[in-house]
Amino acid sequence: MKRWATMAAILLLALAAGLSGRYQALKFYPAWDQQVYLWQRVWTAQHATALAASHDLFSTLRVLGLQVHPREGYREIPVNTPLLKQDGRPLWLVVRLDGQLKQLDETVIRQRLLQQLQRWQAAGLTVVGVEIDHDAAVARLPAYQHFLQQLRQQLPTSLQLGITALPAWMDSPALSGVLQQTDSSVLQVHAVLSPQQGLFDGPLALRWASQYARISTKPFRVALPAYGMGLVGIDAQGAQVESEVSLRVAGATQELSVAPQQVADFLRQLAARKLPRLQGIIWFRLPLADDRRAWSLTTLRAVINNQPLTASWQVKFLPQQNGLYDLHIYNDGPVDAPLPREIGINTGNCLAADAVGNYRLETTAEQLRFIRISNAQLRTGQSRPLGWLRCQQLTPGGTYVTP
Image (cartoon, rainbow, N blue to C red; front, side):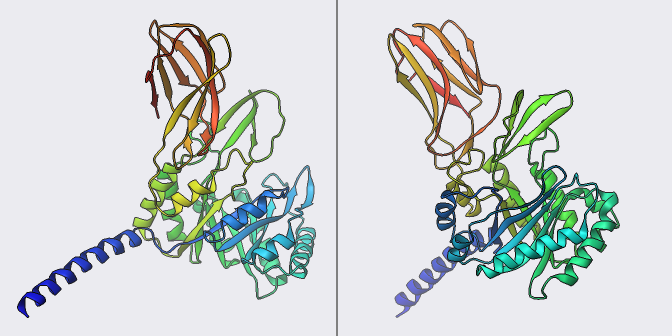
């Protein structure tokens, strides 16, 4: 009996240790609600695939339904309402009011918004809230407060009203009045601060989130990037931002991307802060198969589930003719990753070579070095041209990749 009691005690201790380890792992990421933006202005058949594949990952969809722009005017987004009804998840109608608008035509905006809302409800969509996305200048926050106050009075009481909030607003005493008109808000911590700073600065985003948690008396979420973008038409006057849709602008282009590991590191630090009223994360944006700047859903899932984000690269030599090879860098790892900083090929039998795209070539007597000159994200399972070379003989195993 004493022997069985001892064994039972050992088993209980082992079980407790195992459960404790598992509990710590689960506790590492709080039970944050995960939502996602659908921001495409043109809906395609790929939306059905993306929605079905993400059904277990995101509780709620935030769908761009109306845009007001100083040049384009009012644009109702023709979303696929039968598809959203079939999907069945709760929806937020997102209304984008461009920050360049000289003033808000409040009456017309509310009218257009309510008309779109009624169309969605008539189509059987489960609309639970309206989110206003407006990059208002700090000086115009009092006017924005008035707009939200009037909108709140016209919205059905069954619907929530939310806004996106900018870090630049946090030093303004007018922010509290804006937030009082809402049920919740979304702190946006990703933006093009400058080409040098990129789209996302983890330590800065952490400071913003901590500061916002001290200011907001309402529940809030943090919007995080799962995409990249291009700065196109770069000249002395600046550049235009190109995201999921090509702007077809002539001139230089610079790609800005966010590495999944950057965001994963931020999430771990954010979880450790245990910020009050922080309810969850909203991801921008739902990945479609042909959205070359968005992370793949596989990568987004790995980041959300706190899985390892190990990159793996392979250089492919594609023979053409007469000793000519096209070179491609291939991402055969489990997650998307930034292009490697350098690829080296050891060979002394090459007659000519050159780099293309994101790389430039440095040549020595025994080595070709393809050095990255512009960054980009490469999805898992995809490849990108690296360059070409003409060699009499390739050295087996003579290739190295520096992430």
